[in-house]
Image (tube, rainbow, N blue to C red):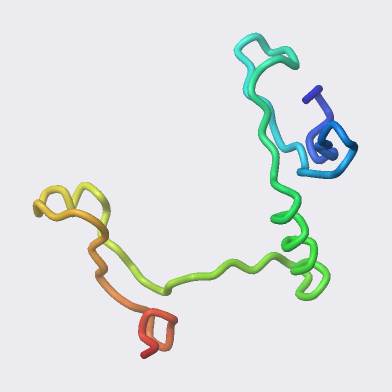
Length: 93
């Protein structure tokens, strides 16, 4: 990914769109390193949402959870749910 190519197409060897270039990690500051891209199926869903809603919507659970450090202090594992938003997805049966 050359500087300025973020947002450009990522093509396979047959010229098919497989993603959108987003960034590159490079120790040297050159165009050699590890490139990152959004997969084309994810991009298609994002474009669809922008056209339909004017923005990208993301699912939420509607919960508040304890910080990892607090969970570890209690000797628990996983996620400690502190609250579920009223009328939110986590409160639905």
